[in-house]
Amino acid sequence: MGSLILALRFLTVIPVPGRESTGPSALGRAAWWFPVVGLMLGSALAVAGGIHLDGLADSLDGLAGRDAARRLAIMRDSRIGVFGAAGLVLLCLLAVTALASLSTSVRLRVLVLAPGIGRVAPLLAGAWLAPATPGQGLGATFAAGLSRWAGPAHVVAGGALAAWLLGIWGAAIAAVAWSVALLAAGFVARRLGGLTGDVLGAVVEVAELGTLLGAVAAAHRGWL
Image (cartoon, rainbow, N blue to C red; front, top):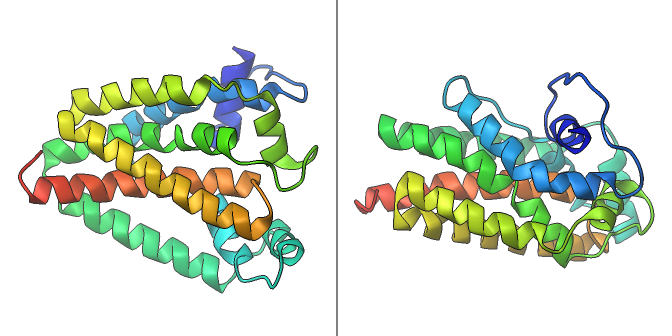
């Protein structure tokens, strides 16, 4: 239960009671719970709504730096910059527009699915990309304890869930969303010199948005 508590506290702002797992590899071990937390959030989203965007905003702001060291310094600044603010506004507009264009039945299923798909993305990025600051920071901590089987296992589970909720095209939507998120992670990581905690947060949002937009495209063609 300690790993689940750590995953809930890392991925959400919910004040979860209890004692979380500790140690250098605790966050990586907790990654097994990330998609489960995403599914829990998706169930809540289907009723109420909500989104986490800090990592995406920091990553967008950091891209404006002249070199990797400056970009990392910008990302550590708690203030939001122009690129981060613009990116958040654009993402929210796209998400709201996408959801509004879906039928009620499809919308509810997509809202359940998207957070789960989004929270598989860090498991894939963490296994693929080296940390920008080895031995320090959330990116390094996450990668240190991450099982190489966590990503593939949850890809299979997430694909099966997507197919159950949206049919065969649901699995295709999930695959595209993960691919786009990994491409985005690779691009940002090259600019930063590696993976950071903010990049992990950003890929969650990219994969979620990819799921929403993929569902819209599929629904428009009558596939959902």
